[in-house]
Length: 380
Figure: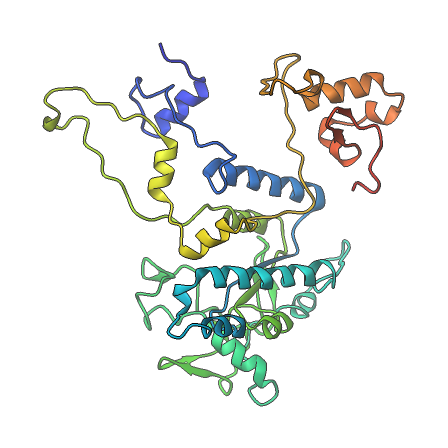
């Protein structure tokens, strides 16, 4: 006899697992496995919880390692003949240093710190931080060289049909963009940056004349400071948040396949074969881990980080919580829901009687051996 939730049976039918012998015998890859599907889904839900509380993000920034950084070149020269692909450990460590420098710039230096309150965002506000143009070579030669080297998309399309961005004979990133005299924001919150038609300011790359339509949006100060590809996009609406989080938590790189025997194949000598669903086997057969990512994981660098922290709440009916505990655990502290109910019933504070459980972590802390009675200051 097999048992499974009815929703689990529906999911199995949708996934094509209609063999009853395989349902209810799943090998699950838990959310504690870093980078797994459930782990990525939990991080996505955490990010959406921050979004619901704080609001729409301001910027979406993509920071790409520059293999020609002088720090990397200096380390490679220590042993003659070394190439960058031979030392993924050096690349991982140096990019980690650059990433920490970038985050310190945002947190401590308030590099992108601004406050628009409730007024509508104008194109002047966006143009203050983001641009998508080829700088003048004579007025700003350093930025010009960095933009030409790091911020030109492609070229793709008819100029390079085999480019990685090409899908169905079109650029999946929608390059080249349209010329715009000023920055605009559409009703879905997607920004079209100012890209003026300036025929006198172009650059030739691989025989293709590149103008402002091929430039990836960037911040001039960040670009010059880090000398790398740093794409910065403005999140002007809550509708753009869906795309941003889907891009961030889409999962790991995928590669390779597995070929299984057909259950109805005559080579089975008439024996009925069943394919049991093994999520761990599926994951290991699908994901691709590069050498740099492997070093990053070995060094235990953070794969993702969020601030402020998110408390994952447990919801259940009275006395029907599912608990996993060790022998030395205190049995009074196994459910945050029960701790919340006890706090509301026993506390003399009227505050706790008028709030919902989802608001609890903004004001109180769950202690290891009991519920914290000290309120947080300013929600921190």
